[in-house]
Length: 138
Image 1 (cartoon, rainbow, N blue to C red):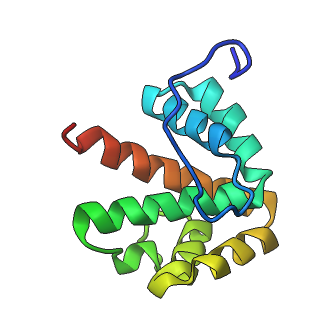
Image 2: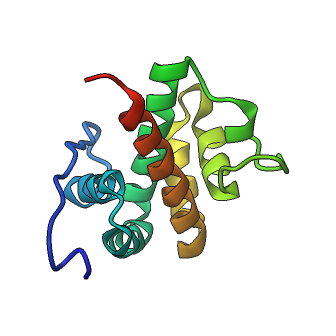
């Protein structure tokens, strides 16, 4: 079963700055991740990783969610050299680039990453978003 066989409820994702984000694709990835559908997650994650602006937006949304829920990002989420971090190095690099409002630089950095690095960043971002969304009261 792949994401082409069925749909998950997509999350409303937008990019008010018009940076070329594939918002429906990212919303469906978050929905599949929230539903725990591994085949769809794999398929959609690959598609998001293949699109640098959508990758950057996934990381950006995870960072915004963390700021909202816990008041900021810990060093383990922004230090690319932290050997104890559970977050992918690629996520940490993008999150660090976006600190202090460097969001445009985050998008530029995502464009210079390999597809494998972007996939790792998206994987961490969706894990964080699912964790936050799953524990936030409606």
